[in-house]
Structure formats: structure tokens, C-alpha cells
Length: 237
Image (cartoon, rainbow, N blue to C red; front, side, top):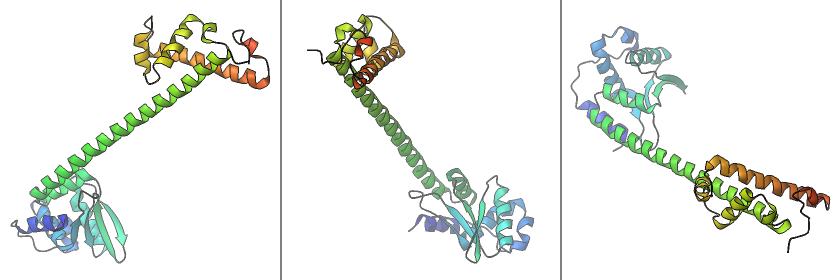
């Protein structure tokens, strides 16, 4: 049995006396009968999708006026539906999961509403977990990519001018990065001789990157690397 059929079956088990669903009197329905009107309408022309797949609840109306009247009644419950034309009919529909849950309650399909809510909560949990996994995966990928670039820069500096040609603070971070290729900035900061934090580590690595870029440019243009820390373009033996 489909979820929509389950909802209708639950509604049929309820006792309600409203019978007249003529659109001309819809706006004049007393407040206490509006739920019964909606229940009758849903049994006659309503449907709701399986929440495991997607969120959609609708009423199919024969005329535009009937759709507008039905929409007005739904709005009286602080739910905002939309109307669309489908072939020769007009459809009043909801796609917001909270609105659909509220509508199921109004239709007195409380068991179906609980089932809907359980599915909705599980879906939201899965989506949140997936977002966290995606975020963590992206962060790991970003960290690995940055580490690879940093190591390439350091290896270039070591081959061209040697790490000993660097200031002591840059020598330290360069050697540490080579020893700990997968370490985060925070982990690197914890192993330095002075406490400079993540931003300080990043600043030093960026300095190394600029030096490496300078070496690449100088070597690409000819023997001009002597401008950079007194090095040469020849590989350091």
C-alpha cells in the first residue's frame, strides 16, 4: 500500500459529517468544519508522495475558483499552498516538509504524520551527516593539496640554495613540514620551538612559497637567482 493510500485509509476511519464540497460555499465554511472539508477533499482528489522519495502533497480541483477557495481554507491554518494548472485541472500543492506534516495533522492522519516525521528526521540526519562528511573530505583534500605544494616548494629551495641558506625560523618549519607531510597547521605549531599558532605557521610556509616562486622565476629567466638569498640556479650538490 502506498503512503498516500495509507493516509486515505486512516482518514476514512475517522468520523466526520461534512459532505458538501461545492467550491461556491468553500469560503463560507465555518471554522469547525474546515478540517472535515479538507478531509473530504483529500479523499476525493488528494494525494501525498512517499516521503522517502520526495515531499509533495496535492489536491486536484476541477476549476480555478475551486482551487483558490481551497487554497484560502488551507491558508486559514497558516499553511501557504501554491496553485498550478495541469492539463484541464488546477492543482493546490505543498512541497515544504513542515507544511505537509501540519496538513497531515489537520487531516487527522496522525499515525501517518508520525511516520512522515520519522522519515523526515532520518532524512535530515542523513543529509546533515553527508554534509559533514563532504566538508571534512574537502578539508582533508585541501590540507593534502596544500602540504604537497609546500613540500614541492621546500624541496626546490633545498635543491637550489639549501635549507641552511634560510633564516632559522624558516629552516625549522621547512624541516618539520618535510618530516610531517600530513600534519595540520595546528599540529605543526605544537612542535615548533616557539608558540606561534596556526596563523604563524601559515605565514612562514607562505614565505617559503614566495621564495620558491622567486627561484622558479629567476631560474626561468636565467642566472638571476643570486638576487634570492645569494643562491644560484644550479642544483645544490
